[in-house]
Image (cartoon, rainbow, N blue to C red; front, top):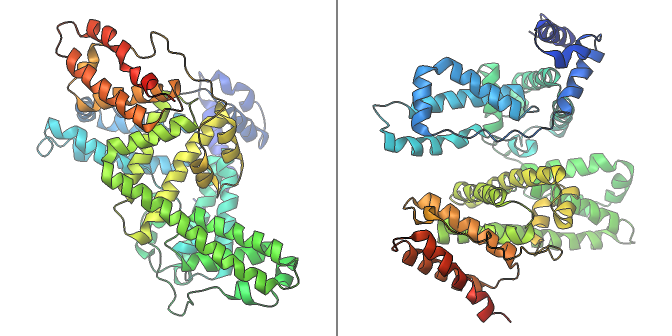
Amino acid sequence: MRQLFSNSSQDKIFLDTICQEENLPRFTDCCAKKDPERNDCFLSLKNSSRAFISPFERPNAEAACKNYSQNQHSLTGYFIYEVSRRHPFLYAPTILSVAIHYNEMMKDCCRSDENPTHNLEECFRRQAPKVVKKLAQISQKFPKADFVTVSKLVMDIANMHKDCCRGDMLECMHDREEILHYVCTNQDIISSKIKKCCEKPLLQRSECIINAENDDKPANLSPHVREFIEDKGICERFAQEKDTHLARFLYEYSRRHPEFSAQMLLRIGKGYEDLLDECCKTGSPQDCCSRGEEELKKHIYETESVMKTSCDIYKEKGDYYFQNELLMSFTKKMPQLTSAELIKFTKQMTTIGSKCCQLSQDKLLPCAEENLDLVLGEICRRHLTNPINPGVCHCCSSSYALRRPCMGKLEIDENYVPLSLTPGLFTFHEDLCTTEEEKLQHKKQEMLINLIKYKPQITQEQLTSVTAAFTAMREQCCKEENHEACFVKEVLFLFSPLYSHSK
């Protein structure tokens, strides 16, 4: 395609095809324009499409497999359509790659000879996460590549994202293809780990490179970057070529530390910039800069301790109770979120725990913080659509690298007006007596959220008492002939611990 058509001619062919379609009145005005105004018009329509579409939910496994056996080819097309309209800015080859994974999942899970009905749900639950992938930090992935090569890749990828985030998918795909071509034709100076990736079809090549393991560090790479602290000419270089100097520091530090997350490396880079800003104003920058090493060690220790503590809690409590810990924390930080949103976000965080906490120490931080950042990014996008509170606003609008620590330091939203104890707030029905553990856990979590929204300052002792009272109430009422009448009567006593223990 690169040889046959220019990028502008590809745009023209694509838009001509759309404009030839009938029954698309929304595009009439755009189709009447000449290029490049026509393309800009289409992009403006895309950028203004903000209507909410409910998330694409995984259907019942048995029904999905029946549909797959009857409509195998059309089902993949339907999946692409549904994902595309929910994610209009998602890179098109990524959607096609996700569709391949989806088709493989359907094919694998729906083989009736190997997956009886009771195993279908587990098969879908296990394989579905494979559709989400992410970009790794370039200097970590390609530590043998020199600074000039890495700088070129970084700038090319940054420019590519301008087109991608503008919604110009054709230009976005063309940029990505050019980057892949450059990487694969310069393997000898970039990485020894991508040979098999570059032999794959174009659609699979990008994902393969993104998920390739980090290349080995150069044998002669020194363990430290002391020249960025001890060199006598450091302040002159910082003053004369600030951006290049900081970029070179980040490059050198990152290629030595594949065990750090990209977000942590950015925090270290910002800390180094702040250090030079301060120290180069003094008469003895070397003495001042040496203090920065202690600050760096402190930050690394604190970050690793936070992740280790979270994993210790996860390993001790397991999925359900770990998620409950997160629910208590995030409901206090962001009580304006709905129960469904809080459960969704904390479920995603729990999944990160199950995935990352089993990894070795050198892989824990990149896995945990980079995946957690995706969830926090989703929370921030939710905030932009419908503001949550000033604390969340501060974290989402401040430094990207500091977003995770900022969210972690948020405490109870003091401006939040607690829910009133209305008759409908804690109403329990027949379905509370379900024997399906997953549904019961969901109902317990909804009650936990409402309880904290009703009494944000609840103590652990009070929470434990209410939980015990709830368990006793459920056990008693589910034995009664009229479950709901029992719930109406007993719920009056459920919250007495909140007042008998109140200070």
